[in-house]
Every structure is written in C-alpha cells, then in structure tokens.
Image 1: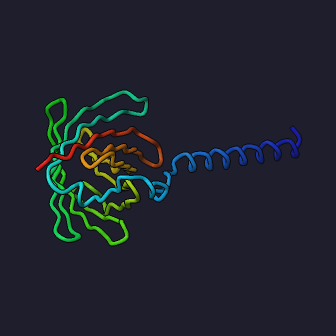
Image 2: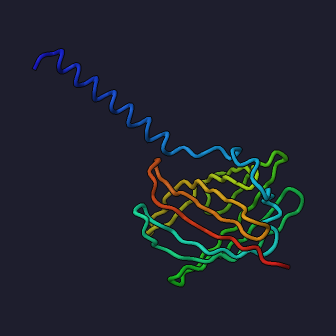
Image 3: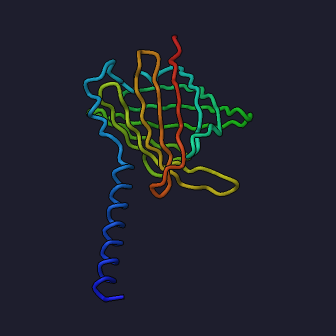
Length: 187
C-alpha cells in the first residue's frame, strides 16, 4: 500500500472520530432553561415545594423498559431563601429510601442544594414554568456506590401539578430516565 493511501486512510479515520465525538457532545447537550421564560404558569420552586406533595414515578433503563416504580411523599418547608425538602421513597418491591434536600434560593431564579447521597452541590435555575436541576447522585448497586449524573427537568402544569423528566448518565453515556408526576396537596 502506498504511503499516500495510508496517510489518507488515517486522516479519514481521524475526521470520522472527531465528527463522532462532536455528534455525541451535541446529542448530550440540554436545552437552555431560558427558552421557557415566557411559559405560564410561572414556577416559583419555593412555593410549589412548600407543604405536602406526593409524586408517582418510574425508572426506565436505556432500552425504555420500566425497571422500577415508586411513590414519593414529600414535605417542604421554607424560611426566607432556605428550604428543606424531605423525600420518602417507597418502591414497588417494598424497599424504602429517604433523601433530605437542603436548598438555597438566589434572587435570580437560581437554586443550589445538598443532600447526603449527592456528591458536591446541585445547581439549578427556573425560567417561566420550567426548572433545570443538575447533580451527581451516589447510587448504591450491589454493595458498590456509583456516582451518576442527573439532568433533571421539571415543568409546572398548573398550581398543583408538575411533571419531571430526568436523564441519568455516567461518563456521558445515558443509563436511563426517571419520569415523575408531582401533585401538591391542598392544606
């Protein structure tokens, strides 16, 4: 094989590799939450997650198969710009789990939060009826804890209903999705 043909093949493989990497990166990008700024009703996270909320959800693996169903009983309390969201999960197999978020609201619609099973600080932002929330969850599986990333999107439908879709990934590879419907209880 001629050196010129070998060089051409190597160049083609490099270009193909760069194109593939760029395509994967663009495919993983989330829309900007500000694109929902005009959507109504406007979501005030500290108002929606203040009081009792119940949620029903599913986890789907990469192929779309529902592998887990669950309910979440939540109780949110806010004092000024500081909030606590106590989540109690009950899975269809009878297992239970609890997560307590400690949240901070900034004046510009941004939120930050921590929880015992979250690595570092979660960050998010509201715009219009939407909230985008990103965090790394410490997920125990068969005695090993894996850190997986969540790209979490919530959309307020009306004053009592919010829908949530979250993508779970590791090293940029989508592992599955969580879908939830939140229902705010009346006092």
